[in-house]
Image 1: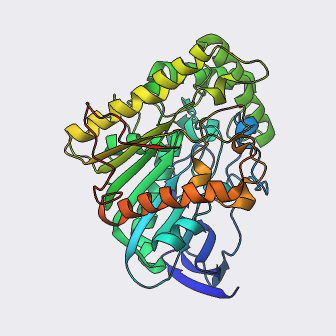
Image 2: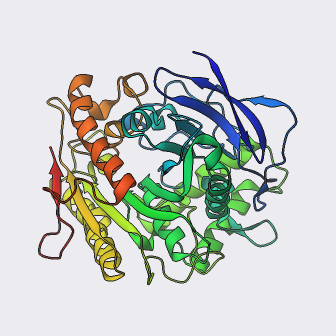
Image 3: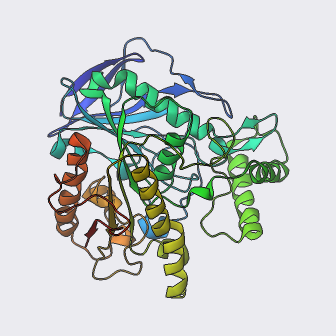
Length: 427
């Protein structure tokens, strides 16, 4: 592997040349003090090393670790994780850009995680892949008078997209041909961004994996209630409290909110409607980019199937109400706004597996590598060659969509209609 240098408005970065792609990790797109809006990253002098993955924002362990397994290697955490990871075939040219927003229930995750390595997509599809870190949990979505205005994680996402728009040509990308793609909270984030008053010039297409119900955005009153509960549990100034205390109070707030709401999916801190830059109701727009929208067959098992086997009716109801109905609602909204919409359901399940086609099981087929997903419980006893075979097919569809707006040229994947709610099934 040899070094390669990219020059951006933030300064020069030293990346690493892989077998078929160039990799840059931990590139700053912004900076911010705790509970403050992001500001542009301060340019540095000289060449900054970007040959290794960056840190992720402070967070508790993922509640879906029993399904996905832990990230390997486990990344360091830092409040200064306003970074993107870039994978590109070349620093010259103008190729489509695919920007990944990770999931994690607005409580965990990070674009720097090895799960979201974009090497396969970039290498196979001649695209630039960018994954984004944004603040999660209480650091990203606390609404508390005098402390945090709320929706800071949304502002982070907007700042990252603006940085990408300005600098992606330095990595061989076309700033006027951006596809946003994300899973779970990442997909939900994309809908929020499209509904906001933010300028999203250059966003041509979106791919939404398993977006949850749009109404997981909090009302202002509920967000205020959760913020006050956090402050009471913390018992000190959130701006100066030790990070460990902040995270412990976050955990306590989650427990209290779960008991109060009875909701097994909803996090205690999430985007807030009617707080800048979000409107009163998300998922409402008059102009929409073309979209791929889908979900997995057994989404609900990730949240309900723990030690005891719950009622399959409960799991199916959660899958239907939280994800399947949302996919149709979004498809209708995008189509009504004039977009070409392609829908899918992911049904693939390994032979020995306790979760079925669960929430997140589609991720290894798009991003990451055998090393990063090795031992993941949701993949059961599946050989990586089996994952790779279907994964290559899916990645080619995503790549074709990013290049020209059609996954397969209309050969077998027809656009969405109410009479044809699932355009293609992956099994």
